[in-house]
Length: 185
Image (cartoon, rainbow, N blue to C red; front, top):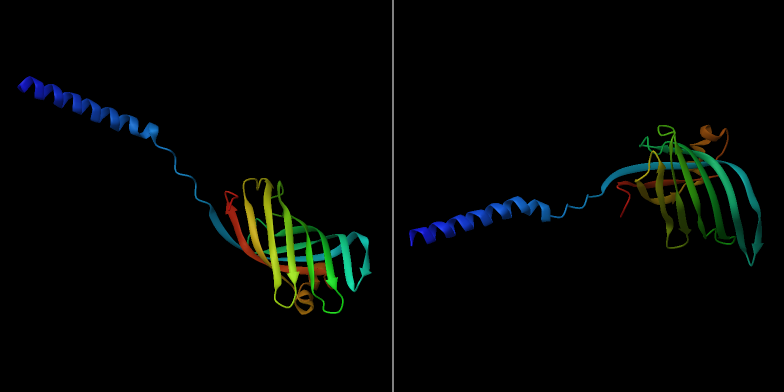
């Protein structure tokens, strides 16, 4: 009887050791949590490089392919630099309300081998003023992404940035959001 109990004890001990040794092999790695780093940017457009001639139809001003360059002022060295935007808009002349959308690229001074590229959309109407921008990092910023809420800058606010453009800026937006690392939701 003693030998049977001893054998079972050894078998159970061996099984316990095997379970403990092989358990880490069967465990799945924990997914990396996305780190969110707050950003606060001012995107200021200084120069219209080119655009399709605007037109008015049924009281709506249509702007297409307005290619602009300017600057991005930021609390993050990953964004502070120059900007390039291609913007489109449909604006009701009677109210000033409209829809704005396009693409945006940011070339940060601190990351000369990297840049951000993505899209934006914005609404200005009786119930809403603002929009969203989503950008992906490329080059030395690869793997990062940003998501921001946008507020257009008023003419008075734009005047504060005349020093960047050597005169009044064409347009601009205040972008508040976060950098995502890794670049996911």
